[in-house]
Amino acid sequence: MTPELSVEQFTVAARAFLDENAEPRSEEKFVWGEGTDRVGLLDEKEPEQEAAEVAAAKQWKAAEFDAGFGWITGPEEFGGRALPKEYERAYSEAKSGYRIPSQQPFVIGLGMVAPTILAHAVPAVKERYLRAMYRGDVVGCQLFSEPVAGSDLAGIQTKAVRDGDEWILTGQKVWTSGAQYSDIGEIITRSDPDQPKHKGLTMFVVDMKAPGVDVRPLRQMTGGASFNEVFFEEVRVPESHRLGDVNEGWTVALTTLMNERAAIGGGGSGSGFGAQNMTRFVEMARYLGLADDPVVRQRLADAFVRANVARYTNLRAMAKIRAGQLPGPEMSIAKLALTQNMQRLAQTVSEMLGPRLAADTGEWGTFANVEFVLGIPGVRVAGGTDEIMRNIVGERVLGLPKEPRPA
Ligand SMILES: Cc1cc2nc3c(=O)[nH]c(=O)nc-3n(C[C@H](O)[C@H](O)[C@H](O)COP(=O)(O)OP(=O)(O)OC[C@H]3O[C@@H](n4cnc5c(N)ncnc54)[C@H](O)[C@@H]3O)c2cc1C
Image (cartoon, rainbow, N blue to C red):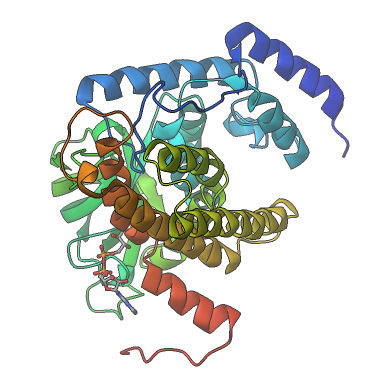
């Protein structure tokens, strides 16, 4: 069925909304010594700044949703406009020309949690959360990893015990990004310890403000605290908030993991990171008097080439998704390329800066790179470690024999 509104008419309306609510983005030229010198990889802020940014993000999201651009492809009964994907692309393209508040607080909730709720929740739960999530009123987080289970996610131990119309959750999650400002979480639990580990798992939507939920920030070596440990002490969850069938949580978790890889691969791989920061690092070489050093020149040229190769691989994978195919193993290549390129670049930056990276003298653009260099190990681990990505590429792309796995 062809929608009554053409893409052209839709884009005119989108531009009118954007003109009224946002400033056009001017061509930003990087000038050494001007503006902020922060080059962080993780979303780290002081609590007051974070609260202000979350408030600004929510205000924008509400205005966008109320104007009809918050969930362009979503089903109408849950607040979407049920328009084809090309309308969403047209809006993203129009929006990229405007300066809007960072939408970082919604990345996990809308990128992973909402699609899982849409695919696996009962209608009343979809009704309760989806509209509110896409309007920015409800923020979601992902409660998967535990101290004993990360790469081997099926090893989780948080317990879920049925009690009439409710479930009682007890256990600990860790590395939960954004839990400190989230309203709900998507949690994977062990509901039957007697079944094999990929069976006996059940997923829920849990209220992060419920009695018994305790969110404690974890400080990273970069200095920031963007993720948390979350403790669950006999937290009661209504049976209606179960996602998918009892003991079938693994299938539900896979919906989230597919979307996670697509979000990470799609968001990084050289596009924003490569182009913008390469200029910064080239200017750094000039500032430090190293622009004629043959080794530095070669390393920077190499980083530039690799960032662009990663970008094209990524664009190919994204085109496949846009054409309606599932995110495939390309996403693992994209993620691996991103982290390997960052790692190499960090090595070059560290060598260029030398002692300037060890002590903060207030010199612009030097010590600030510590946040970049020390943030990389986290990015190499988040959303599937380098080794796990290599396993996927080896087994699923190259068709190598599978690594031995205990039963
Ligand atoms: C910045 C950041 C944000 C995160 N946000 C979230 C979040 O919001 N929600 C959430 O649930 N989790 C989150 N995580 C956790 C993340 O998903 C896990 O850290 C990740 O899955 C790895 O698990 P682990 O830390 O337990 O390491 P482990 O799985 O214990 O791995 C330890 C080491 O062993 C290697 N290894 C493990 N298995 C194999 C294998 N089969 N073959 C070869 N090598 C192997 C790994 O590569 C790694 O080097 C986040 C992590 C980071 C760093």
